[in-house]
Image (cartoon, rainbow, N blue to C red; front, side, top):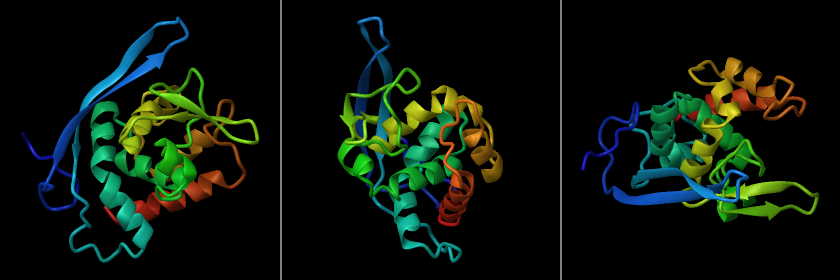
Length: 195
């Protein structure tokens, strides 16, 4: 089996473990259909080699844990791996949020027709419904985002500011909270320094 390669990390990852994820989705027709059946190579935790620009421990750990998944998503969908890492880092607080740790939702995806692949619903006390995703959460929720209309809005975009602008433009913004675009650019830049 070929070892996955991660951009700018200087070589193959070691100690990979392969497994398969099969996520059933309900498209509203009463039938479940497969969204994805992918081989997942789970890399051992690793830090970027000789990267002096990365001075954020949370960003470094997050990139180490999820960089290979982001690259897999980018290869399948043409959504920038760096921008995916930044978006997820913002939405999941570097993978430490309740949604990420307990429900495998690293992108803050709500339940609805836009995002596929959920295995359940997590309802918050304020009435919001978020998707629950199978493990590994970064990969499955990331594919759900990248394959949605939101992901199509940012396909091929590598510039962090353009990526953020497209996700915050109404109507149908991914997030229209004031200041969100600036926060997103900051997170993208933080993870980029650690790749």
